[in-house]
Length: 420
Image 1: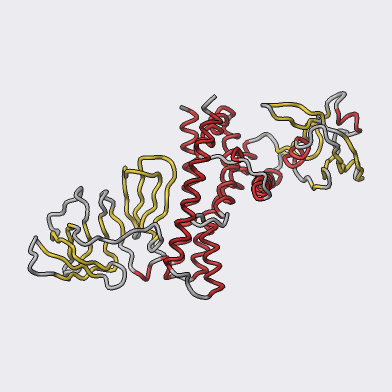
Image 2: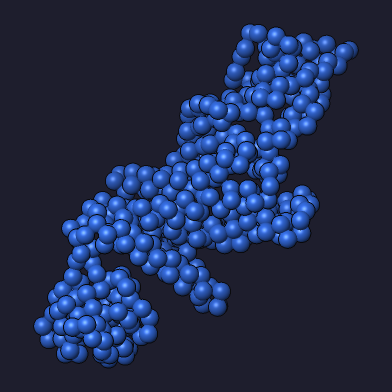
């Protein structure tokens, strides 16, 4: 139960922060956000304020921001639809009820024959079942529509749609989600650092007796600033580089008594959970200063970034292994392990996942934020919009790829973590 609750909270935070980035940028850009949903599936509760409907839905996985005019925003009313129209004193439609779950005694029943809620803002239809006369109703710019599931949202006139703002504002709106995940990753790591007694540094605080490190000449207070030519400004970077070289020659750049020296050694190979890691027998000195803890937030996030790009690089270079990817099932399995390791590890896990989510969303695959940004860039270069039919086809291809990949990853996760 602890693992399930932790998973829901962590996943929920990641999604809400990501979607809030899109929401805030869209609002500031003049794009109507029709709905901000936390969760998926059937609606539990809804609340409307400032033209946006905020919904909480049954399945606590995911969420979305529904922007006017976006491809996933369907606001068409099909001919033949039965609706109830609420009119104001000027006989303008201010609410369109298409749901059988909502009743308004003051509404006019109409069978809609034609509607335009984007440009002309009109509805035509047969009032009170009288099919001899087609009545035409003018629709208020800020009218709402009660959809089939009972959710009331704003209609989406052309001037508040996504495509009506500049390409640069759309680009910022698409980037805002991943950007928020980057910010969350850094802030979560900083929070975890402030909850620790001190932050591990790349300065040595302890060296085991008769260890590889002692035999090589490393001493307490030495600072390892480089491994195999790679700069190591944090304990995470240092330990990762050593762990990745079990039984291989490693060259350390060491600052000792304000002098630089080079030390060569071969880390001992130790096994953990079936994998080999390099071990030389050192422990870090900790720094309890506020500045060190703030820096840790950035260094930890940067370490995650390097790890993600390393994995993506292996995928591109032909070393792809589906075990490098995890879907919700894999994330749940990892969360169940982290949940037993305390709140600090849960927060660091959230930081790592948030950075992963931000980076992966920027991959230029249609349907992901990166794919949308790429289309924005193409439009900016062409200085004219991409034809809607082409953009739709590209997006559908991207969605198809993502669905197939998600199915493959989920099945692989089930086999890895639950089928022995």
